[in-house]
Image (cartoon, rainbow, N blue to C red):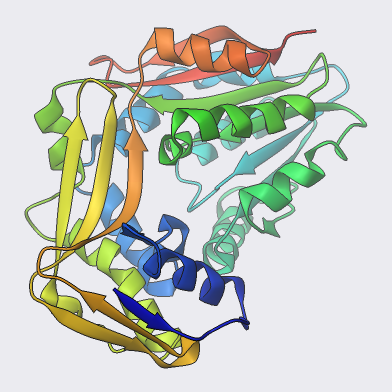
Length: 323
């Protein structure tokens, strides 16, 4: 149940929080996990032994750097555009290889977090001084609208970390179609997809025993308290993870342990929670080759190459536009 009178919003964050918490069932968007504190927590998550995704993709890039860099290269140079660049740890393997090979390219990292971009740019200037880098803060939607503007030479679009996994298949196809519409015949998409595997391995990756993942998910409640003058009792919510091996969908929830009322002053909003009522915060989709090929076909793309780790937990695929 809810009581609300808010009709105008001072920010997109306000509007999204309002929409999510006045819906049934309730939800909040995972992109709001990320602020300075959230960025730090996610860096901790990527270093957890249970969170296999980062190490698997790092190993793929480390062992195949030369071959991948060769596939990216073009006679007239290219623009390397990364969506959701983060700390750039994995991308730096490719960047260093390309610089060592004297390849003509410009690196354009894009991220929703300006804090992450500032840290990345500083580290790149120190670690790879010869690199031409142009950062850009923004959401995927804004970025995709501008992709077609990069048409003077080959584009290589980089999406690491299985970020596409945050989208249900219908939305993933729309996302891929937006990328495809901006791709020319020579352009490439290099994207990571977490693979289906032992369900327990997947559950452990999103529910570590140290509680870092729980703190990361709950950070969105802290942001609401701080930025929107909310009064969430964060400790009264439980982080909960589920995984359906049939659909390959992992879901994250915050579950109210008790009946409670939450007020958000900036939204002039009062939200009633029943005991064990949920707030859905994130999905993390898992894939196999057949699903990836189907998604690609629906978006008029074609898989031309793929790379995997030794356990086959994770894969990076190269896609071309179907002309």
